[in-house]
Length: 146
Image (cartoon, rainbow, N blue to C red; front, top):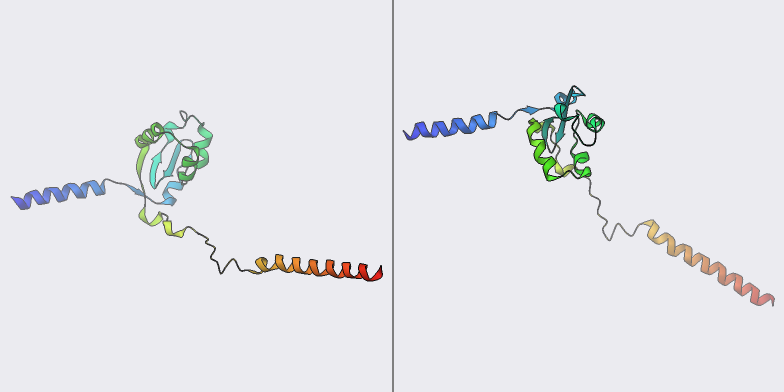
């Protein structure tokens, strides 16, 4: 009996995992018109076709993002908690694992103390020294001629 129970649990967990539909970026890009508009937001795929006329920002806003990853635009606007909850009714699947961006790809520039000793850091003091030398020489020539 315990084997049957284990099998049932395994079958349920398998059916839950297989119930998620995955889409590639290429498949999502095909849904980019007013009669068929999909968006990617936080690696989830949404069919917002029926919501386009109701969108407070207008249909054009969604059409501009249709078929693409709209995560950044969605977050930039600062949607409310209600808007985020409403979004859940339009989910059709998730972005395929192969098309997900890796967080490590972001470029981060860090300046270390060694890097700050570049030629520009030496350029400004050198110009100051040259100018002081020219001014000193001019001043000395003035004093000799008087």
